[in-house]
Image 1 (cartoon, one colour):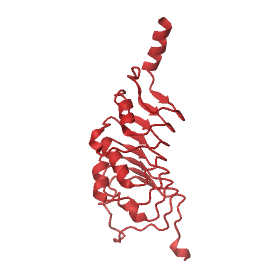
Image 2 (cartoon, helix red, strand yellow):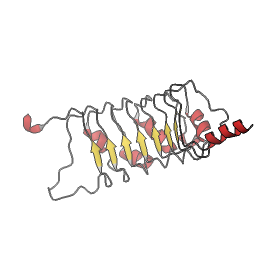
Image 3 (cartoon, helix red, strand yellow):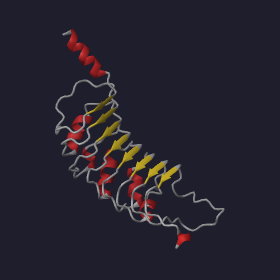
Image 4 (cartoon, helix red, strand yellow):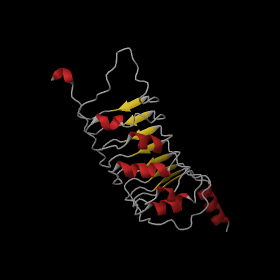
Length: 210
């Protein structure tokens, strides 16, 4: 019993758990994980957000969730599941090529501050208004290694008032164009909090060489 209590106490105080490449497809009853803040379930067999909800609802301290390389069936009504404590979500390589699916997930995580969407074959970002309404507190957005060809798609995120950093590297953007303005004028109505934009490894051409 002493050894059992010792093992349970260690689990109770763990802050980070990583379970990758597993056959997990349901939550079951979890032990008390009062200190757990980060959970990685990369490349598991989780098939829907109900399973995610069953897991997260048992870990109220959880802030960071890594679900990369899973395939999810999205709920018909995103109000069914809410994850207000999540601040960081990684859903790389989850087959989220439709931006409306991304917005469904964003609405379920109203306090999200960082979101990674790499390797999802995203090409288009729909509706500036819907994106700004869904990502109300987002500070870091990673949309690297997708299929974005037009910089105007990135510009649809210009109304995200809290966004500080955006990574768009390793896409297929050929040209970066901003609205015309006087060289002394500041474009204060776009990306008002942005500090960094990564455009490395795109196909951007130098106009002076044409």
